[in-house]
Image (cartoon, rainbow, N blue to C red; front, side, top):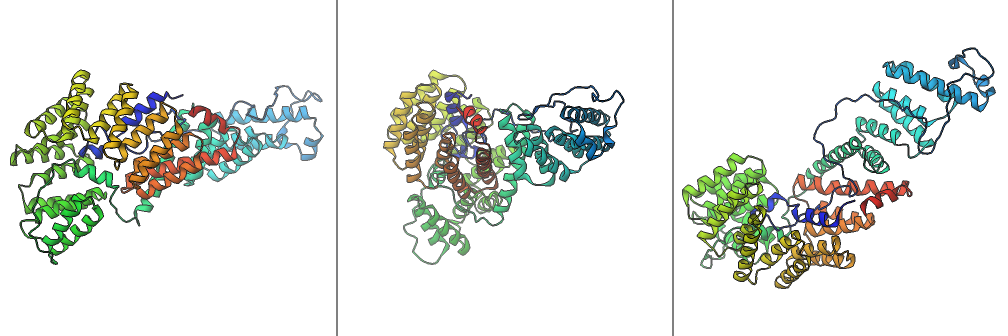
Length: 572
């Protein structure tokens, strides 16, 4: 059972690193729960090796019970070769004699299996099945076929076992592995999910297999979708967050005549950004690049085009534009900073920091350099270095609200709670009309379990900027996971979607609430919406994994309505 406060803490800690360009501490991200909300399994990175499948020793399954004995039939003291009896002779035996014969053959089959004589073991299990249609005999023979690499026969025998006992976990597990080897990943995922639920998620190997197959299913589907998916900008909230992480660039473009020139289209893009019409800005910027700008605006246009490419998830194209921007104006520091985010996403830490070194060499007084390097340090867990960078950024320009917020957050991370609270309170006074300060301070209050104060902060943030969906989402998760007010939480998530229909965090939060309330069909609609909102292959995999997991659990609930109660109990 997961403590609601722990779940809420995880929600606020689950941040996508890409938001580091804005504010690591505050922006919420889709997927606060796990794929399978009842699961406590740890993720394993070790690839499964070739495993030896073992036969079932017990003769008791969930619904099948067989009393066994090692004595020979009562009618004779001679040793009987049960493998040669005809159907008529078997039919003439008593029920007790047939049970004894079946057990004897199974025992011999197990011995042959232990000796790795799988062909002989299959013959003995087949003989046992002539005396009794027992799911264990089918499952054991399936284990032989698994070791022989005969996956079709594994599936056939597991099907037979499950016809006799639909919740026979070992047969489900064997069929899952066979289906995975045959490439039938969706049905394999379903079987592994059944095993996990029926075993109350205590089977760690099955849990790892379930996650492994889920990841593969999601990766395959994401790759297929990406082949035809048209790149698009993320939600306006996301775009604004990224752009606002830099001090605003001030251009006087009023003197540029409205003509079919690159400069004119750059001026239109610049103005559209100021008005937060990002798709319009993108179209104008593309035209500016196509026509070519004068030397005065070329680097700015290339930088902006790189920014849009990065936001659309095309990092390679973004890198090319930033490189060209630096060629056009080697002293334009922002291009180096933005290029660092490309290297950061690719995991090239050395190249990431090199961009900041180059930028400092050009202009050591640019506060954006230190703020964004602080974000990279924060993401990397170098909190002391991050604090120094935020402090330097503030020293150079104390009018940038995010540097103050992030300094307070990193102070909190370093354990300096009193310093953090002081910084936040001073920031609230200095930026009293900032929705961001109130929203992110609310998150810190949640971590301190000062829930009433947190609710007040989120409410204040909503009133300051009713079009910002993030405070709605934060308050919704607090109302749901701690206060238990499902109706209010749902309304808040819906309000977040009204102000920003493309907000993936709102979509994921609402889906999570519905799923945990036992409404998988409704949750599925929102998870599928998240697929449409995803921009990168990684985001697609993430969204698809929730869809596939939800579909699988829904299928389980329909096929096993009684056993599905176990899943609901584990969610509570």
